[in-house]
Image (tube, rainbow, N blue to C red):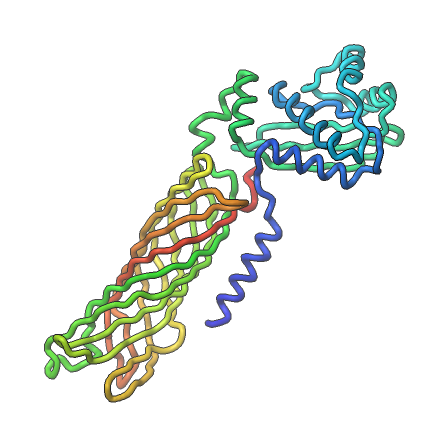
Length: 371
């Protein structure tokens, strides 16, 4: 059982590395595209940023102007002046936001004295945009590089949409959409247990008054969430939890009981991700597997015994905020076992029925963008 945690951590790392491309703002996407062409085109090449195909001309112009500024300021490439391009555009009769064939692009490149033509597209895909830009050698028609970047809506993009007379990117429906299909994350925190006496620890004839008092315990979890519909996801988890309580009779302490278990919740989750915030609520059931034995300590010594932990019900919610490539979230939940935890010590003894409140802080990454 102790091998489960490193295996889950390794899986999380592998998936994060494989699908780590996040939707970014339009200006961040432009910077990424500029860095890509600076790194992949021959130094001192003469380049012409020809067009960005888009339904919103304001977005096309913004991308071309900002990309040109990135390349000019780096000084490793020579960018053809915009006024020269405007003259050729008038001659050829094409729009900066329209589609241009490779043959036309190369012909314009010859007229401008450019060695490389940069063109691309910016299109809505589901709840986000996709920016794809490529570079073509004028002489050989060889594709020198292509970069595709998912772009999320931000204030700059909303302003450009409104300038172009488009309101769809500012709609409530877009704000309700998850932009990713898969989310992976981890969290850690504290829990506090409440334990109903099962009667199997001490003889009630000798100790008629018995009280169980829980103690705070440390918990850690890994989880994976799959977005099914706009506001609905299914989440699977692996939670390491500690249970620790003291048994007393009146004011007399009698024994301390502790055990570890691995909970495997399967949750139905409602999630809303407006802007940089995230709200979620969930409910479901879990299985529990013991990790080792129950440890019982009392004044006359101590003993260990095999333990079985029943399944149960769990529900809760959380609030999160965008931080870096993922979301940091605070989480609170309540879990209750369907039956008694039992120890195998001189027969099967039902020792307690458990319920717990969890408080945790976690971080999740959105992976596998929706197409």
